[in-house]
Image (cartoon, rainbow, N blue to C red):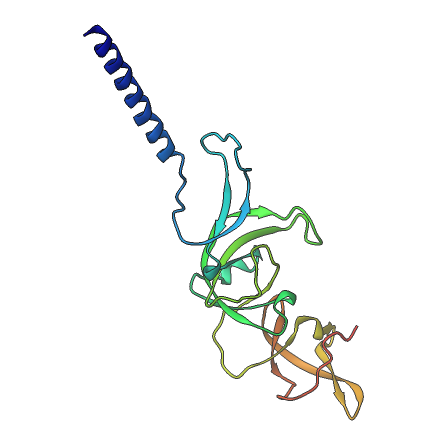
Length: 209
């Protein structure tokens, strides 16, 4: 009858609408492309979002990366695969190694701090093993090993003083500070290699000034 046909048509329309709503519901589910930890939630429950809107920030804490700002004069010595030592106040006495994985092809100007205006290159390193105390956003110190030398003596960069006569450090002998001429080798932002003038076990004043 006409009434039965009308009801059937309504049922068909409802089924079509149900299928469309089911499809939309399945498309509204966001699946993360990797297993990780939610670091930040950028949207509230029930908030309407559009395509491209950032909802959450995720990260794989088992594979933390460090991005270091390298001076343009030093980047020529950096290569992918080089090892580095990572330290920092947030790590306490703990240290870990990292590997250079990427050197940015683009140099940029430093916009703030004591080195404002200098040119830097971003170098990315991946930690060789997870460090539980490190969190995304922490600051660390990176000492990239540009040469592979064994059994070398190094002192903090600020321990070496230069004057017209050459380089020297201050060492503690018999409870007194004494000036000791030295010859230096490879340098980094943190340490200086001492090729002669010091012996292992000498007590060096790290900040003589």
